[in-house]
Amino acid sequence: MSETKTLTLKLRDKQALYAAYMPFLKRGGLFIPTSRHFKPGETVQVSLQLADEQDPIEIVGTLAWRTPVGAQGRKTPGIGIHFAEDEDSPRYFIEDQLAGLLNTDKLTHTI
Image 1 (tube, rainbow, N blue to C red):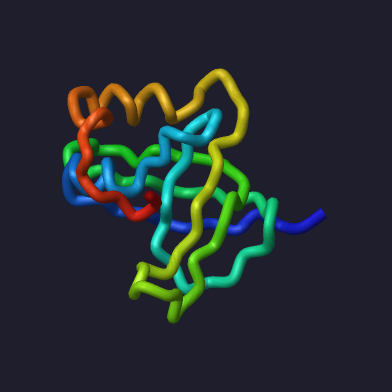
Image 2: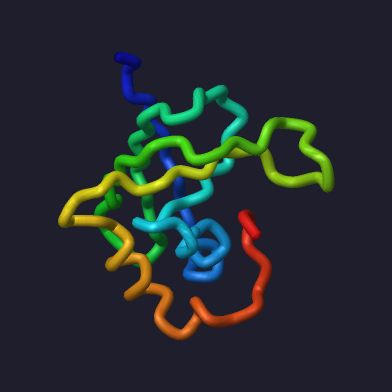
């Protein structure tokens, strides 16, 4: 079994959270900019710090995909993680924070 890798994601506002959030995954997910290498299915722990929250949100997920350095279209290198299945899913907290933004056509890091 591989060891869990840890990343920190600091977001300055709700627009940045919107750009990183992936509601189309079954349990939700996040895009985390990084040049570190991850393997498919690898467990990743993310400490998510939002500008208007005092304490970070600790999130565990698995690697859903990776955008490598030098990707076509000048995409930001990073990983997409799929939230782990648990009753305290960060999906509900994030969707609460993004009320009113989720059904817009603004560009994101993912689609």
